[in-house]
Image (cartoon, rainbow, N blue to C red; front, side):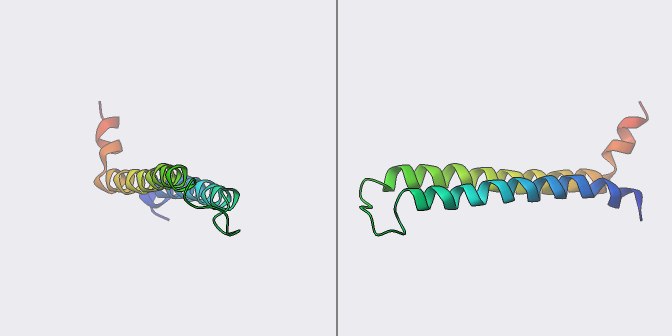
Length: 84
């Protein structure tokens, strides 16, 4: 296994864990707000929208950070920095 492949495993695992933690929380909140039970949705829409924006931002941010980290590893920035 190449050295860069080993370095890529940790960021991928962390990103998967973050998404696996946030996504079920979003589903639980949706269920708790009564959207699936036929409850009143008018009073629920603003908190629901806020929760979806925050949860979605966390997931998008984690994926973006993963992509950036993988580019850094491929570019060899760590090896360049270790020379100094």
